[in-house]
Image (cartoon, rainbow, N blue to C red):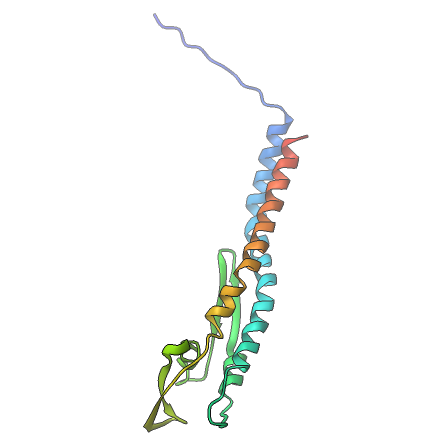
Length: 158
C-alpha cells in the first residue's frame, strides 16, 4: 500500500513583502504608465503644431489651413497607449493626411472650387515627427517599468 507524503512550506516575511509589492505594482502600474505617456506626449504635441505651421505654402496664397491643422492636433492617453489625432471642420477632415503624404502628394480642388483641381505635394509633418519622438516614449515607459522592478526588488531583499 502506497503512503501519501505531505510537505508544508512555511515562507518567510520576504515572500509576503514581495507579494505585497507585486500587488501594489499591479494596482498602480497602469496609472503610472498613463502619467508617463502624458508627460512624454506634451513635447510631441507642440512639435506637431509647429511642424504643421511650417508646412510650405504654394504661390503665396494662404487660407489659414496650416493654422487650422495645428489647432486641431490633440493627444489622448489611456493606460495602454497614446493616441495622437487631428480634428478639422466638416469637409476638411482629409487635409491633414494630404499634407502628410510627402512626395506622393494629394489631389484637391483649388480653394474649394470643384471645377479646378491640382496635385499637391505635402511634407511629413505628422508621421515623421511622431517617429522621431518614439525614443522619448520608450524611455519614459522604461523608467516606469524600472521603478516597478526596483519596488519588487526592495521588497524581496528585506
